[in-house]
Amino acid sequence: MLDHERYRRWLRTAAGQKRLSELYGQDNDTLRAQTARYACLFNEYQAVYGEGADLCLVSAPGRTEIIGNHTDHNRGRVLAAAVNLDTLALASPRRDLTLRLKSEGYALLTLDLGQLEPAPEENGTTASLIRGVAARMSALGLKIGGFDAVVTSQVMPGSGLSSSAAFEVAMVGVFDALFNSFSMNAQLRAQAGQYAENVHFGKPSGLMDQMASAVGGLVAMDFAKDTPDIEALAFSFAASGFHLVVVDTRGSHGDLTPAYSAIQSEMQAVARAMGAGVLRERGKEEFTRRLPEIREKTGDRAVLRALHFYNENERVSRAVGALKAGELGLFFGMVNESGLSSWTLLQNLYVEPKAQPLALALATAREILKDEGACRVHGGGFAGTTLNFVPEDKVAEFTRRMDSLFGPGSCHVLDVRAEGAALVGPTLDSRQ
Image (cartoon, rainbow, N blue to C red; front, side, top):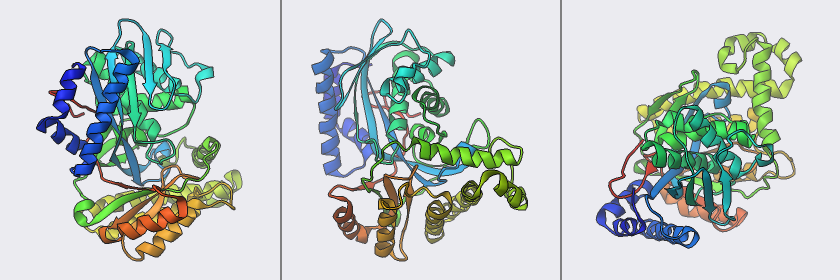
């Protein structure tokens, strides 16, 4: 591990710039901005804690869900990708169990890790995520300890790129780097983050967000078993002339946890009506055959959401096959079908019918893209973002029109990031 000065020198070297280009892309403006961002993080650490020793710097990417909307919590299939926006954590170990964390824009947080049980008063807070991660790692037999850290993130809350998963995976990475030689595999990192979110933070979620952040790249994930099957896909949308554009519709998020939870609980109610715990345990044929009985027990919306699950699972497989065959048009067709299914069957585009920014964003995208590319709701839905595959020659028009609707800066033009959680620094190019 390293001190501030060695990090600063490395950042200005060809090796340092190459490392940044691997994480964020080769655009010169991007590299200059990231170099300045890293320098600001070093300055912030020194301003808060003074000179640190044995520093580690961990990067964890945000993620984009491409197909597989609300399937992971019922052991479904998902196609997702890490993106080149990340959460960065610079930390050094302490000799006690006190943890101090200064996150950009927030007050200094201090935690005592001598107590790892869920604290009801921390429910829904950053403290609960850190304590939950530490608790899970300790239960797995891994070492934990106190540390001083500063954090900055481009994966902003409400962006639809899973800021919580990026933060959780970054915190796992810090504990792992400082006390376990950065030895955890991506599966364990993701599971520790999910545990923290489910048990300590109090938000039901599947494992997709954390896995995409921990693994990196474009990945197909099958959650049928406790240990998901992960398949990396070698495909470049940029090389095919398309950009991933996430549009932040800036709708009111309020408290959407009940809306998200209802999707999972209603799907599982359908599963229980068939004598199972989750939908993946029963096939679509049985679901269709028993539909009148299931509808009577669970209601129409639950049935429609279950139908989305079964169709979405099949779509993921077809979409992966299309990418492997290089059939981009077929793949975009699957993305558009998925988006329409989320809109009409899953019903996660809005909570209040009078406010439908996601629907407006998708309708506008369809007008612009016509028969090119694809668009869909992104992530959990109800408010937030859409995901769009936009031809390079339409990015300027697309951005202009979306900015006119939702305000300047509403579009984020992204790339797929090849790496998941990563140590960053001289001689620390470990990739897990």
